[in-house]
Length: 170
Image (cartoon, rainbow, N blue to C red; front, side, top):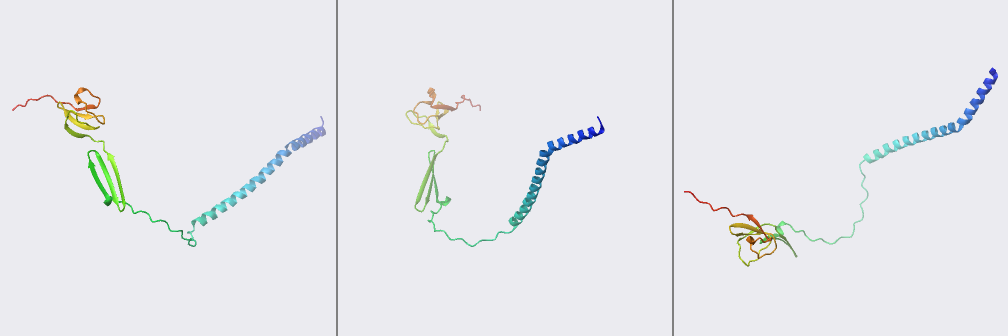
């Protein structure tokens, strides 16, 4: 192959490569142009951020007063501790608030044991009642019962077992 033929082949290859790369070069140029536009927009955004920060840092300027709304109804006066009365009856705690024309009561049943003395046959006991029977203390586990505690009734639970008889030494 002669020198001229080699040069012609080289020129043909360069021309083919340029033709093949032409769409890539065009896309690359478009991408570079868009990047420059975005860079300009980012500069604009930075400028805008600085301006907004400056505006937000200024003290607020009060506007003109608004129009008053229609007057509302008067509310009821509150009830305070000075209006409170407390009563305890059995296990029931009652809080009564009296203020002006208002009278409100709230009752709460307190879950506390109450000693009722020695078990009495035929008496009615309620949940939490404590009785002594046979030297031991028993607590009622049911709302009402007339069952005897020592008879194995599930309505009663042994609370304190009777101790052994002791002898006192002088």
